[in-house]
Image (cartoon, rainbow, N blue to C red; front, top):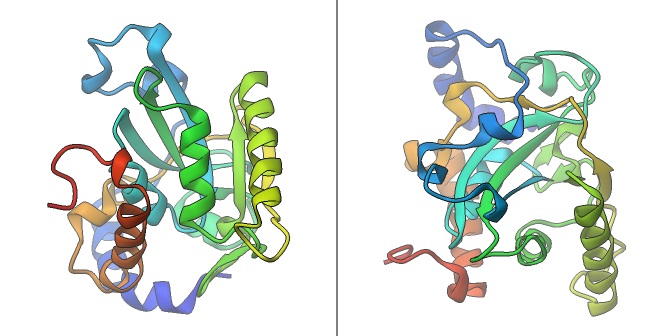
Length: 226
């Protein structure tokens, strides 16, 4: 089910946007993920990560701050229904998870370092929920794109568990990303930056961003937090 607190904050905006735009999604490839900012970077230095850590608005906003991250996109992954809408995903009947898909420059930031941020920026010990956001779409998951990412993710999980960063057992799933990723509706993209005064953004996302910036100042893009 959906989080009641999230609905309360989001419903007025959601109704307006649904009245103005469609909800059909399209499956995308790695090349479709590239934004104009990546055009001058050789493909050998580009990589993508797909992470689920609760509400994708939160995940997107945090990873947008990181040096070397070129593009972040909110989407749905892991389900069994084609072209799901936000309503479909929130119903719990499609199996999809809210995720952020991150395109990054490997010369500046590594997949391993992105996973370190991932472990610190959400609670990976709560199954199917983050705070008051409850439902299967909020599962903690690392979708790996290749065997190298799978190995890195498994090693990162073991290291994090051994570090006792979280006192309870980690329930994060490591799963292969197949042709089951869909871009979320336009109004979900860059959501925090476009809606900072919206209730959910100021009450939930803002404090998460502040915590991340305090923990990882060395990873911030120039000017972030100033």
